[in-house]
Image 1: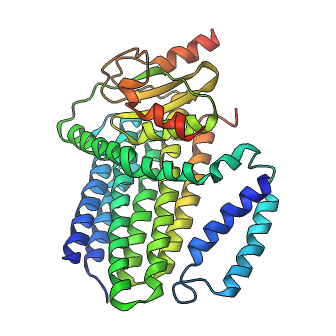
Image 2 (image 1 turned 90 degrees about the vertical axis):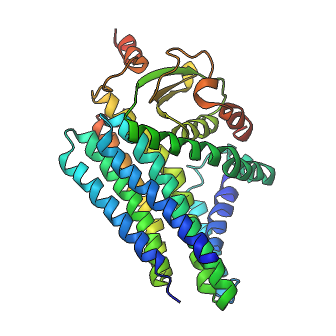
Image 3 (image 1 turned 135 degrees about the horizontal axis):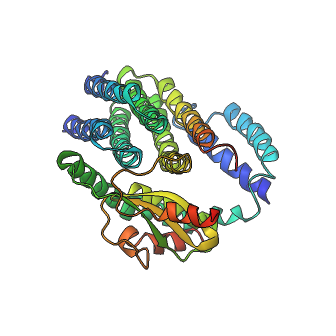
Length: 121
Length: 87
Length: 166
């Protein structure tokens, strides 16, 4: 029963992590790639951590070893660090790419470009 | 007890890391490569957590925490460099 | 005051990281070492962390953050991932960068809102401009070229950000 829960979480995690790496090849430019990469890998890592936490709680109930308490708490801390830093990093890359002159491909509107031009003119 | 499911998970995430590595090698522009490296960092953190659970070693998960924070700083530094200094 | 905030944060992180050294609890040596290191960290970061951070020590705000993370944010992320999966499979995109006017007061609210926007369906914050009260958002499938509010982009997240960052 618990093993099947862990397998379901692991399957979701693997699916979305692989989807994140495939989206790097599927999309045409930096900004759309960032969409796939940031969202899918963050979501996949959430489910990997959930699988580890379920496993650790199960082992605590079976063996009572405090090592598994540490395992659960530390993976939750790693998840919080990742969830706070990942979107900020994506934002930094997007802004840097735009400021260094990589235009979004196939864009129907680019309001940021207009704002930068307006400041320079 | 060692739970074998985590090994398969770590192997699949390593496969995803290889797919990302192809993008880093191909990537036509510098921001494409930075996006690839950022994705690779997240995948390595996930894989390290799964390996820590698979081998029953808490120290791998500690390394994952430190790696997540340091790779974020690396991404920020490269982004600042790309946009041309600390304006 | 900012020293006390930094001290409490670093000591709480130390407690989380060293739980389980004495049974399921903490051993005395770990607690003493934690107090020493938290004092060092709090003393050296007291000028960086700012005066207004004490509002994040309010436990009601923490309850709000947890409810927000488990409820609307997680649901938005699930929808976002299914959306990206759909776009990866079909390749149907219509990207563009739009200007979204928002009505927020301080920088914490901007941070919460732009991080939430990045993690939710089809949108990615490129730049935040607090001086003109606007966010520049890369949208993977543009529905409206010049939105008047943040509702088509972010849904109910602006209300949450305003309440949580106050």
